[in-house]
Image (tube, rainbow, N blue to C red; front, side, top):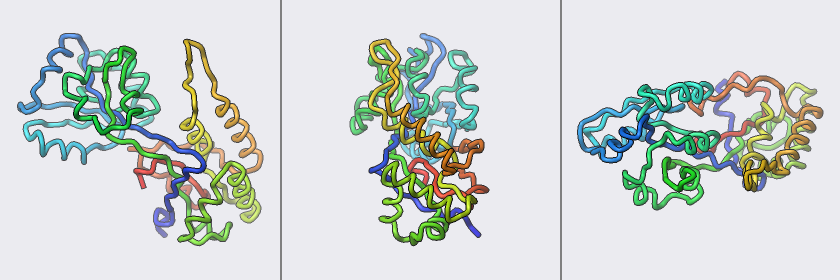
Length: 284
């Protein structure tokens, strides 16, 4: 049985949306190298090292068509270890020339002072069609564009159509009913309780608490720091109550969440018991 074929993608604008933005920025180790990088001629034959947590071969192939003399040496580092490995070399001569940054930690590196100003590369014209919020994420405290996004996507719930049909009576092609079952936190609670009851406690709505945490963290109205003071959005404390209730009601299977390798690999060994997984819409 191919479990992957039984999973369907459902974008839930009525619940919450995640803007997962992967950013690519040029990184250098010294001020002198920044100057030379800014004047670099990408039409000349040269090799650039790129670190990423997922393969970027499609983008590399497209760039190769425009810059045939440019060779991109790609190094894929597992997501779980990416920051640790990058932190150990950033600012040294062992750092990569380019680095992919996820929305979850991009701010840390954008404000580090260790990324090159992309203005020298004509980024303004290259990114003129980008969403403004993605451009803002890539600006440091001085307003310099040190990172630029190549992808912005909403969040999506992936649900097991077999399990939905078995415990909720929702046919695989009935997307409207599936969306209704997950259209609000009250609806999600009711759906989770139904699954628990009809499965005798053997099936769960969510594979982890991240299915509650991620929509909330992505829908915050305020940042963590405002006017140099810690600001905790009320949605975050509310989400803790939701998590506690989900656990007590048996809607979540508490177990370590396997971080996605390359942001695409599903934990397939668990799909038979879990109804929903929250992920980025682009991986479906």
